[in-house]
Length: 156
Ligand SMILES: [Zn+2]
Image (cartoon, rainbow, N blue to C red; front, side, top):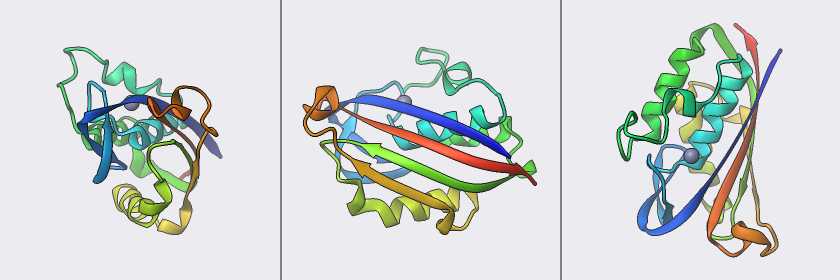
């Protein structure tokens, strides 16, 4: 069995559209070199970690080598190719979405359905937990939101 863990955090920006799990959603987006999709970024790092293939910054550095405002769907596509995704089978994915700005439970079904489509797995294998920080710190003061992902896979 393989296990990978991923983490991401971005600062909110009133001027940015909100992208989560590859979906454009209603709400305040993130300041980022890419589209700032913290769920896909944490997921990509978990996928890379599960097979020992470094991190998304290695393949997509936050500089001019990576196209500005790149869709995180492109990043996921590359990651799935790097990890030779067809040779793997996902057991389950557990996600913690930590925010005082976005109530992820309102979009939970849509997010799970889209992730299941993107990864070609059954939606029952994906769980999302929404958390706040009880108003503590940069997440609590609504400056930033964060995401953690853990994933379990086996070789297909
Ligand atoms: Zn990110």
